[in-house]
Image (cartoon, rainbow, N blue to C red; front, side, top):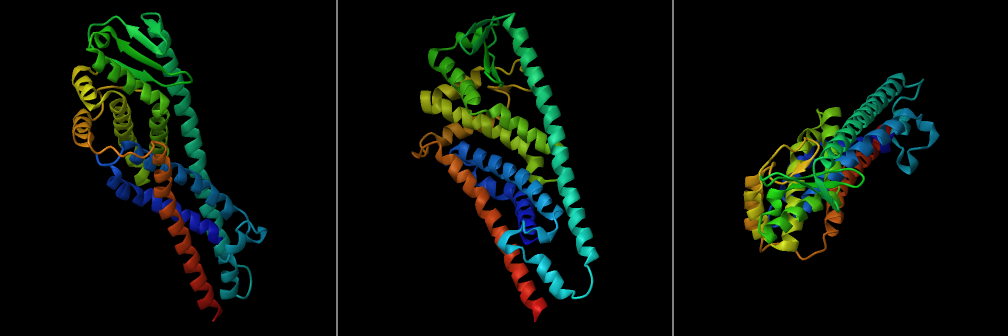
Length: 313
């Protein structure tokens, strides 16, 4: 049971404290992909730790699933030498039921949201294909207003108007690079996952704050990708030129979310872009998740060990 308690403690620490220390990574001195990786990996870790802890609690301690650090049940036996510890079994099974129920709810919400998201995106693109002209992954619409957004899916589609095509070449390329970065990074899936977690488990601070944070961070990450290819000035100009338009909620629009913050980020971050590979963001994000989780598990193991010593003496 020690391992289950340790994993549960790690989930609680990440769910409650991750939004606090992840704020440090949201700065123009660091790539936005690093903060995004931290949010995504922390949320994924909580969603994995909860059902694993629930399963470990659901199995009797005698099954040995706790491995070498399954000390909690033995310590209870030392502390109470006579008879079965009924209250401990009730607490263990109740905790397992709560954790597994949360997991089932998350899966149910996820399946429903994913089906609606895919259907809305597919229907929207199907309708637009009858009104516009496709050039590769870009679907051009006949509208004088410069509007651009991307719709996720298996193939993914960038929707842009002729107003975007009439921008100067640097701005037009920056707009398309921004939307293509959304598709390459599977940003639509990340936003959907954040919405699912917030709907299923709104009482967890990490999940409650994730939708707004992830939406801003995916836009910053796409801006950074476009700026690396075409420079920050064309991206800034494109943000000021492109209008919001009638993009659906399932799409990521060029100029809909946190435009002022993104302009400031591009201005302050242009000379401070790190030289390390973009893939390093994933490693750093995983470390931001692993360090507090390992510390939480280690703390629980030490507390149980101290309890064992005290109970045996």
